[in-house]
Image (cartoon, rainbow over all chains, first blue to last red; front, top):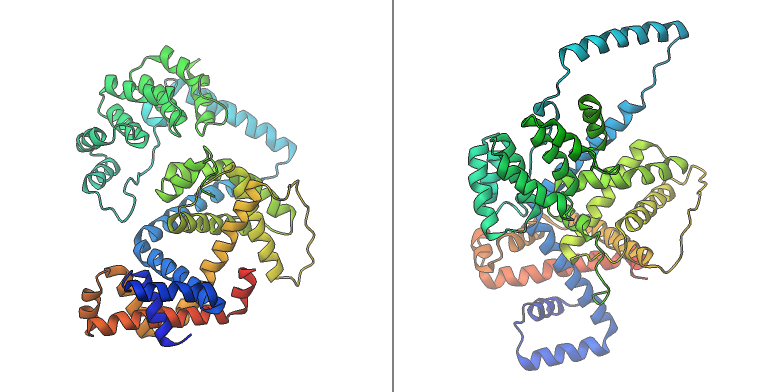
Length: 244
Length: 193
């Protein structure tokens, strides 16, 4: 292609051609395959570049987050696969030590508490380069455990975005932390009965809220509704065993 | 594609786009074990599986931001096929090793296969475009970066200390140069067909 062709490509994409120029351009697209191919590649590259630079910061944030989740996941996989070989007599020793520790632990810590189980991580609510100030406020407040401030931000965000299940969920957790159980339970119950991706997480935290309120019967009842495929299923089973 | 119905698993695509940690973790929990198994059974190990899964998720992310990817099949099938394709490509690249592939059950021409193919081609093109962009001269790279970051061509011209008309012309010529680099690469012709 000539230099002039690329200039016309650009002007066509910018809709900066006159009616006559536009018609001539489209006519050539229909007859000249090479011209058309070049134009299509040019167009695709424009869209590629636009995306590459406009989303640069969001994309970097995504890749970093992905990397840490991936390392976490594969790290856990590797440690759980580590095998230590024992001789038979060592099993007997290990078993009696474990039993001893078990008895001591059981006597000392027989009542499980909320803080042993609430292990949510930092959250990231802002989507593209953080254009929304209020989301950022909520995110920062939550991550720095300033739950009173987080509650104010979540409350306001939910006024304009009332069906946002992510916000509902974190507002629920925030209110457990603030001991506003009525509000926390109401929010989490709504999610538990819904069908969002937060369904199982919300059920787990609803149980933890009851645990924090020392309502052990309600905790147990809710824990038993957590399905096998839920991320917290194993933790839920452990808690059931402790409470039962 | 637009007439086909969106699958409920679209939530995974949307979650990636929103950089939602819960969803990304859920993807690993639910879908990674199958991929890891497959790669382990086909001349790979779990480190390689980790890379393949990560690259695949980045490709899906890129395609969704640029082309508004719409899932028309279960995420499970789509994701597995994509990882598999990436792994087979990686194996081809280090073909000094003899490779035996244990084929799973796959039906040709189904929705997942089609979509995985599209995403795979997108990913390959994306890699090629990035490679060619890096071959451009510094002046072009800076100008293009400024053009798409700042958006207003007047401001771009000002920030680079050139006239508006020159900046606009230069932008077309730089993308033109990139077009030529891409078209001249043998890989592009393979991808086109």
